[in-house]
Length: 350
Image (tube, rainbow, N blue to C red; front, top):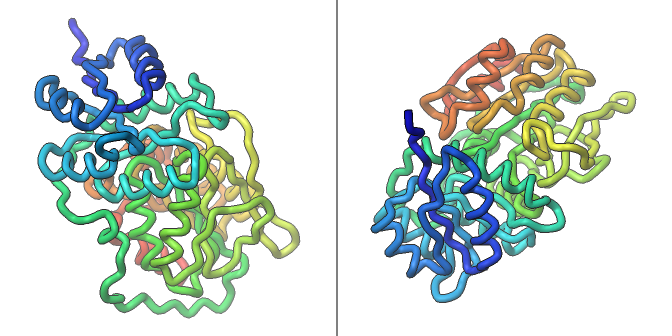
């Protein structure tokens, strides 16, 4: 029986990148590279003629930048798009804008932080997940998605003792919007939050800064030794694992490299396992939309240590991979929609 292949179009001005991606992706029996394009104008015609299932798109290109092209694509011919960008702060900001515009994932070009092999493994996972995502037309400008218009009343929390509480959140595909949805509902006196979102280096810096501008709490990219304190969310930096530790009454994070875990660095499992070890029953674990099984093992460890655990439901997920696996492993107490997750967190602290 023939395999139904995922048709991929590679859009990048670099001939080397087009060659590497084409060669590596074509080795997979379930993926077919139907074409490549050096710029959006060539890509436009190939999309119409070749009808790809997934597009990989560079955002820094001549003639028309990838962000402008993506906006047009999402409006007139929406398809799952994976952004491929350089490991620079500027590239991170543009990639984040691309996600706001409708891209489903971000990956870094081969460089010093990722070997070609590591990049290929992650790209394959993202392509396979993206092929199952239904993309709806988008007409809003990228910045509108991060503007807070009228501040809705925030839930009131009367927390007498919060120094020993920690909230741990893990997410992947679709997670940038899901994390925004949760964090913008958090009041200033919420216990410390630690987050792993699968993103490459520098992209997490832009992500954290953007969230910090719109949340009542402080949001920052974690640095080694940062304290986990009330009213602050620490986001694991791209390409680094983040673990929680404890010194006396103080919780802090360790940021370090190491092997990929579940094909990821940072890994949700790594964070959740450390939470289980050092926080135990004083923790709440939240697993949001994402592909794969990262976080399932760690969430089970958290539950076994006495933590309360929450998973986003299938209907509200972009990809119901990570939450589904966490449920299958038996590590989830509550399954609920994204919009209800903040209230579930508040109830568990009541």
